[in-house]
Image (cartoon, rainbow, N blue to C red; front, side):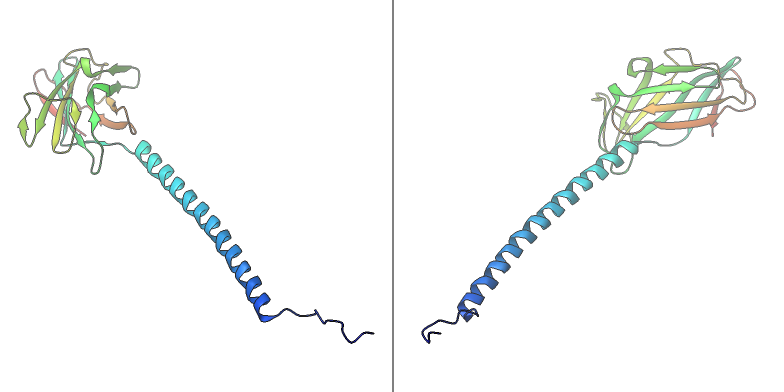
Length: 188
């Protein structure tokens, strides 16, 4: 064999450094892509959770008692106050519907068939915009403009408040054992 033959069995220090830097760059790019995909997935799942919570929970809540007006034949009307739930977004009351149901009947009411009185900061609002917002209450009276389903003494009834966004808010109540004309009853 010739003595002039080169021995190329090992890298030099410079070649090893270049290969090491290349591995580090490839690993950095790969980790950037993986972390970016993870952050994107986390953001999308967070949006899904927030949307689900908004749709599953109601932005409305009843403030105060539910009161019915009695007649000799049963219940004349149902009155309650609504306000925004804590952290709830404003609700267009023009798009809110109400369903009153008993064991044998169901009647649906719209904004045009219920009476509403608006209150802002504890005073009656003279020019409401029909958008229920923070620090506002709306008094809803169902049954003055249209007949209620027949609710007799000890009758169980459900008022379901259905806003245009979010879940419906059910009010399940029982009429008192006796009803007299012109009397008002708080129901539970």
